[in-house]
Image (cartoon, rainbow, N blue to C red; front, side, top):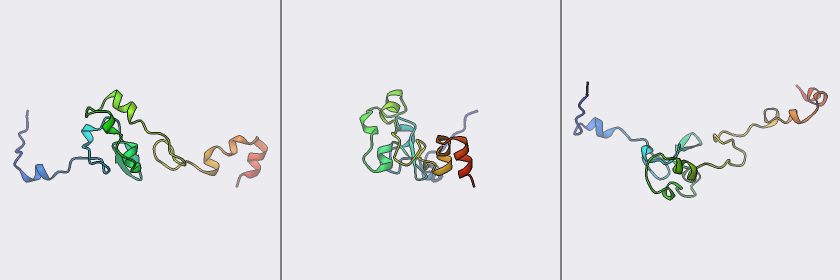
Length: 108
C-alpha cells in the first residue's frame, strides 16, 4: 500500500534534512560514514576541524568505497578514533606496563 505525500503541504517542506554543520552537505550525499566530534556529526574530519571539506575530492555524491577511503579520519592527539577523549591514568593501560607487585602497590 503506497502512501501519497502532498509536496505542497507546509509540514513536509519544514522538516529539516540532516546535513553537515560545516559545509551543509546533505547526509545522503556524504561519500563516507561521517565524523563525530564534540557531539556533532560532520561529513568528514576536515569539516569537523574547520580545515576544509575533504568530500569535494571524491567528486561524485553519495556513499562509495572510494569516498570512504578518501575521507577516512586520522586519529587526533589525545582522542580515540571515535572522537572520545583518550583514557588517562589507570584506564590507559599504564599499570599493565608494570609488574604485578608494583601495580598492586599503586592501587587505591
